Image (cartoon, rainbow, N blue to C red; front, side):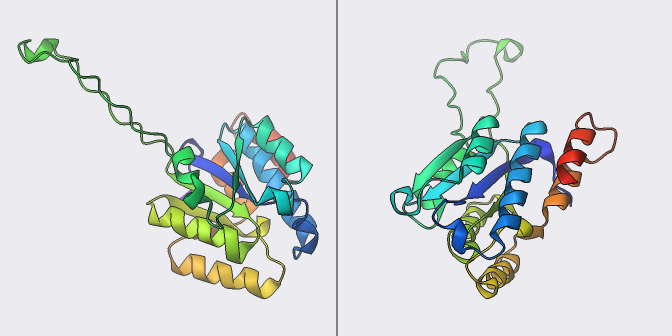
Length: 207
């Protein structure tokens, strides 16, 4: 099973200014998160951000926040460790449209009746990365799995204050059904072919 750009959304969890200096391999993690956001924009993949208790941990670092906004995305300020508890799921899966009453008259012949519109299910594949991997990233991803999203965790754009905590999060996420991928895996699966119109631009970001 490969990632499909048309069914994907990108979620960037808590790359915050007062948190990142304490994060293991933070410069690599930030570079990959920024790369993901820019690739998503090129391929029309929606981008969302979260920020845990920003009054204490600060906003997302400027380059990440700018990339989210450039892609037309929004950032959810939250207090719960899982962003799903504070409304992320509703942002990712829009409400189903309600069919207006009286749209079809039973007295009309069937061929004149309008078909009810199909529910809007939205994009069900969530590509997610963030910090800390064993707290907010993991709890958000597990809740998304519980809500029946497909969850793909971008390991080289995730970290914690310690390598051990980060790796323990990956083990638990994989054991609960999340797919573990890297930034380049995401990029080339979203592209699928070197003939894609955005191939050269994406390749420039990867290199």
